[in-house]
Length: 198
Image (cartoon, rainbow, N blue to C red; front, side, top):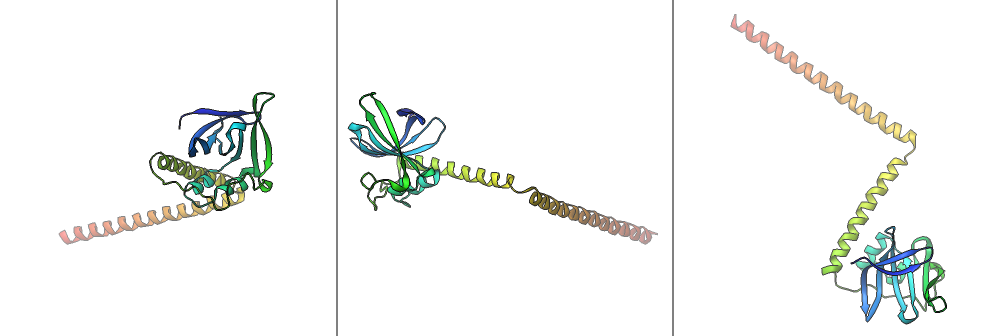
């Protein structure tokens, strides 16, 4: 998973190959990252013409793809922001160009078969990659929960604060009474022992 620039597109920037999932002479299906860490799933259509279908992919969908919980085509049909990119090599400018595609209207001709899943054994480098993605997803979920708490309305936060304050005060009073009871009991025992001594 070396940082190797695969392609550079205007308005997207450089994409770096992160993990090749399927390889036949050339990478057929692979994951890329941009300079901001956003991931894309790339499907090779015609390598000689520079034709690729690229879709931003979430950590959740990437985990489901690697564990066969979703079809390959679903990663493109339900792409983040419903946006895909169709790349091709422009011979006039001698550079890659691309068109935006609505993920809901992508032609079946360029999508994987409906029943195609990522059927590769989970071991070695692939397993290591999957575990890393899974850890990132767990961290992302924790951060999302933290953001949800921070976005709780002030009234709700105040109610929680007052509730925990009341619990704290009640526990404090309980401990005071408990200590007083203990001191009284100890004092009575001491007086009893002194009277018994006399």
